[in-house]
Figure (cartoon, rainbow, N blue to C red):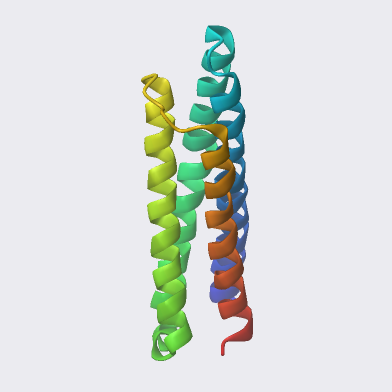
Length: 141
């Protein structure tokens, strides 16, 4: 029962984390398209900051902690190659998370040089990683 409770928290946190990782680049698209207006720039900076601080960072932390806790409860999952691949993909998701924060900081410091097309493209990265992770954990090939 303990494992299932931790797993449920893990899934809810992961859904929240993914929602933020999918939404933040979309905010970057609109920010890059409309950032020349100071009021709009400030509004997007506020939205991005709140998404990162209130949802994205805590959800990532809870996802990682509960994932580690599940491995602690049942270490036998590390016997499978697909779990190692899943963990590698999670590391890539964390790197993506950190990269998105660096982009946010470039907007705050008014040093962003990327256009809305770039942000439309990087919006796909967390989606691809999420799909791969879900397929690995469900199919356990």
